[in-house]
Image (tube, rainbow, N blue to C red; front, side, top):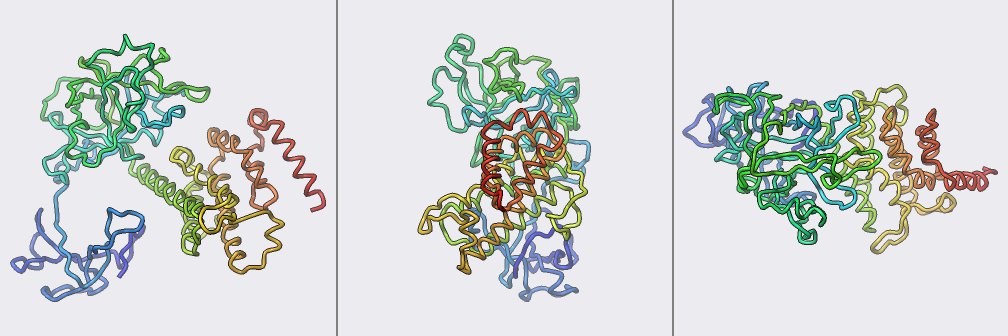
Length: 510
């Protein structure tokens, strides 16, 4: 029997907890470390017998095709033992206390910025930095790239705990699954820098950064984080307190790296050498270092993040991976069956419901008119690469493919009218529905949000190529430029106007 996750749950979501060993009986208390089996309630509403084989939650030996290191969970008559392991004690699970699994933003008190992990545009490498902002209130400049999961280090890797000053911590970046770490500063050795580390400082700063006690704060991929000592940090209190006391949310702390015995400091943002990146749209990404002395003012606030925001990030990440997988499938030249097409269309439909904040998922996504798109979700689609994958989906059906079928899935409108092959017509109809919903997602994601409007305006060249295919490309450009003269002057250039005139001439009879 199939096992899956359901958002709302139903009668199939209930399970009986039954003992595995005969020295335990129904009705006994379940303790940490006990082995149990999980029997579906729908199989037998009254569970009063043990010992005979029943359908139960089962872990198979079948690897998942899209996740090779994972295995399928189903429901069968084969016995599967599940062990109950304690993650938190009841007294540790307090709402105002920082604990394992909590997601926070690290807000630097002095610079009034958030600790962020993102890809540097020029080098295409990941970096950890403090993102400067032009907003009046820096605390409002939130980003999904600044979310960190706190892991309280325990002897047993599965065990969590409430945070206290004597414990060690790991910080996991929620969007990329990378960990916070440090790396020794290098001089004129950018070519030898690890792929998961940021580049070294330029040569003209050699004298300033030659001290052995200086490190960069960097992101790090770790296959076994539970044994990686370079990921360990200790939180130092800013006020007098008992060292075994628990740490409250919104507390200001200093970060001390255990392995190198260094303290996390920011650098001077007025010096260009301390900026990973800056542009007209970005005030600056300030480098963060780790040195062997403590500065009292170098503190971070542990600001809690709502669970809804974490779930939204999970949805955006999963959507981006799924869309990227479908784009790769089209490029591969393999036969595209009906199932991945339908799954992708359903995913894009969910993206439209997501960005329009629609609770009624029975509504036709193309006919949604009255909506108030949440700004955070609009930003999320852009930051996590969902819009990039949407534009890739718009482009890839018209490009030559690899493999045995090099022809594009979709050609010119005139070619479509001449097609009589049943399979091609079916593929065309499904693809058109896919691109309709893709463009709907683009329209909804830019309503009332300047940065998304500018993002779409930069893609006008690609969008213009879709005009004449009856794919709502014209509607997208109109929606972005409507009552927006500044955007029109900045992004619509002579090539766009000439292309538009050419399209009008070619279609004047139609």
